[in-house]
Length: 91
Image (cartoon, rainbow, N blue to C red; front, side, top):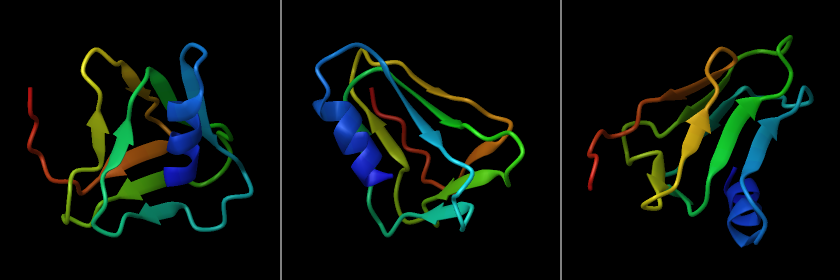
């Protein structure tokens, strides 16, 4: 996940999409007390609607995402779940 976000952040073109593929073996991504920083408009989705639901889990250790001011991030629910992050929205 960090690698995909780093690639999105370094791409100078417009909005990007991070899509999980059907070959994902473990449908839960557990973050190890790290925050994923998104710097530009991005959509996060599970590309394969027939696979297991992908969960991004911060294990109550941190927020899951830090989103740059003025940036739109779309989390496409249904086959993707963002779960167990700390809720400390800063503006």
